[in-house]
Length: 273
Image 1 (spheres, rainbow, N blue to C red):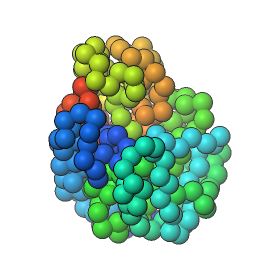
Image 2 (image 1 turned 90 degrees about the vertical axis):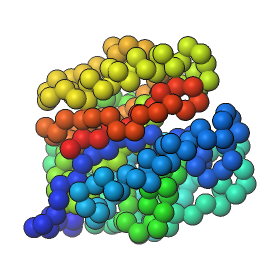
Image 3 (image 1 turned 180 degrees about the vertical axis):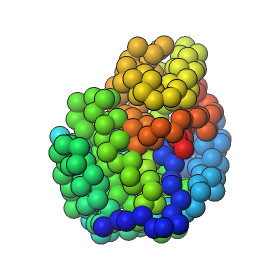
């Protein structure tokens, strides 16, 4: 079991943009060549902003949905190349982070204490919402990592509740990372109308995560009423990892970290704690 050490610093929770496919490991041709450079620099700096190196990572990716919250339970998860049409070498990337059977069990136990059914998958690998940004942030792949799925139906209140159940992990040295995109409308990228829409949504997001509890979670649960919400997220799977990170934040207020533009839209990260 993962247990807290007497001197273990409490980890924050993060919501990070993971970019477009394997964008950090190729010559980008769908726009300026430096489209993702600023985000890559921020990802490389991410470990330096933590109170101490995490004992393990728990990553909620936008690219895995399951009937109930499901964790990877393999000791050495493979990579799941779930992107299409990119250069051949991007399907040969490696990121051999170990899994953690104890952390997978701990996640399920914590969810169970609040009545949330869960499952585990010993065969599924890390999808690109995990290995692409973390290969930038942790290129040595030395930290045990477990992936947690979204729950089908994409109910924001349900994902906030998942996060609240997992909050104790922060004091056990586990960094909880929601991996998605604050803007994710495939038809909207590079459209002139999308930048102002993404900025309206980002302004709402900043106010929502900075609010104290319970106002913060109430605002996030009603995210569809935010300005330009459905323009930015026609389907909310890339926003839902934020809900888990926010739920696990407890009373800690959020703040925007990375703020930039890529493919004609504003994108941002969020940190709590």
